[in-house]
Image (tube, rainbow, N blue to C red; front, side, top):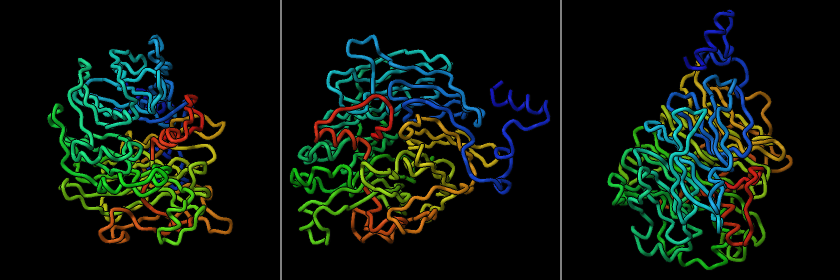
Length: 504
């Protein structure tokens, strides 16, 4: 008997519902405020993925990985907390573990790192048998000569972000033998991409649906790659991919700082079950304008702040060779849109059953109805920017009665990382914290949706739009790897503590 069922039986014997009215009523019978069912502290929490039955969440924890029983959403419990894997390796342990991915059919969990380049540190993909989530067992470790920020695991193939600082390829690995099956890089589509500074085209994330891998390649856009033959991957389409000569012609001063500002910044992408609706999340922050900006005729003065956080674009990719942008969900407002400020740019998300579950760092977590992707509708929004900085949002169990989703938070300041559970129903947070930019601005909790008609015709970048709490911001653009890209240019170091380092 599952823990959820056992507790229900115990509750019924006492004559009460274990989960309480918030989890057992219909959507119309939730008069109370929208709030988490529960949470559990998990130091260093980053990405979270959920088992198909919705009972267990697996979480990357920066210095390891964990399995959390979420079968009773208001009572999550840690089943296993594995720290310092590969500590026996001469260059171990494996560090900067920002991502895990689950192949449920094989009961395998992929644990990858380091997320960013760490000279001298061991890099690779660890495979764990999670047949018993409370006792994960390492079955293999395949060492790589590149850092791995993100991965996808399915059908005996690990899809890895092979950011080597040169080609930055997608690497396909046989999980039985550790043999590399194939790889694909932008230079395979056009050799001119090799002339573009690698900091503008890191492979940030990979998502696989059917025979197509969706690659978020920062300023190079999102690419759709046919992986039906893992030994011979080939591009079949792209979203907002610029002419590589445009990027290769940038001067060093124009390139510097660009990775954190729009346009570009394709950070994460994922599709619905059909594979036809693609969501592309972008990550960006405001930056100080330089002399080049001041001279480009935009009216921007040198030293002024330009840009800001980015949102999530919805695309029709039923024809991968001719994608159509349908709408953009704009980010929450922020009182400080800079990289050192309050982050409300888009991060990871999932589309399931016509719903988009999304995380926005300190901007909170949201649910949108995207059954009509031209007109997405916000259903719920919860945020606590003083203590939460959300990394992921994934559905565990659908439905307004007992459904819920999980969201991992990195924490803020002295508040540790946590795994939260949230109701899968519509609602409004009671007395939500204000998110405004300037003193005197009116607070708003209204969602902002930028439709396809708001974009300049023929432009590959979203036009400047007005968002609540902002002046003019660019509502598309953005980065993960941002910290790495910045440190790469400034020579800064890294941190494995899991505290509020906020590198995406």
